[in-house]
Image (cartoon, rainbow, N blue to C red):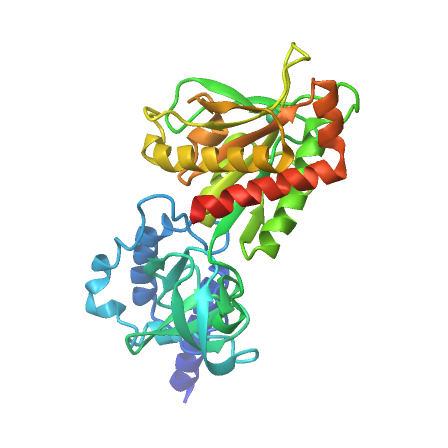
Length: 373
Ligand SMILES: [Zn+2]
């Protein structure tokens, strides 16, 4: 009798210890225990898949070549979805709802073998992938792939019936911020040359408007215009009081898997007579992302033409340079639109005007339309 009690106490403490482990890994409440041996196995597998997860939610970077390459590695029999191990993690029984509905991914995202960011990645799918969802606990959704159940973070799924956009994601970066940041960062991946993380920008010669104010005013109008045209839009910033370096701005677009990254800026010159719009793209020999040259060039042409047509501004040129950190760090097509010169009295006054800003936004949107055409 005594011995029996001891066994029960031993088993209870084992269960408590296992529950402690699970809690540390932020897993939902477990219905079934897993043996410590399997737990260790799992941790090893996580090691392989962890680098796929960039840390922000469960979205992943489509820009790089990390696509579905780990699918082959997952062939071991212990990893099949029907295995006992994967059922040890379940959707939250208190919040789960069951359904049979078509969903699409709103971002490049990991498909996992269990509802936890600690679980193994079965595959990484691009934005706009279709699945049948069978259950959703608010945090994780169960989806069917070839008769097996896998899991995707619910925040990256939407009902296919509610997709009203045109399928393109545009990330908008309103240039600069309230305070520049003179700390240095490399101008591109692996570069020895560095530049300040964010320059402070220029100022309107007659309006006194700061470049970071102007760029956000136009960027918000552009967001509205693009959304009205069916684009999915993501903003790098929507307020002035941020501290986001140029490489970090590129990372926002990269991680989102943007179809186009639009960086909104205004120009300045010692010559107050200088006026007009220009766009900036990398050279074909860019050592960091030269493979994107033709797309960036086309994007830069389309956006510049769109803005010049809509505003009547003087058409400057497309400036090809490899000196822009926020371009060099990109793994997606990017352009910088320099809307005009804040050091030119007429253009400064124009750009501060609501109606003119709307024309710029329409022009950039027209450019994107023709880029994607
Ligand atoms: Zn600028």
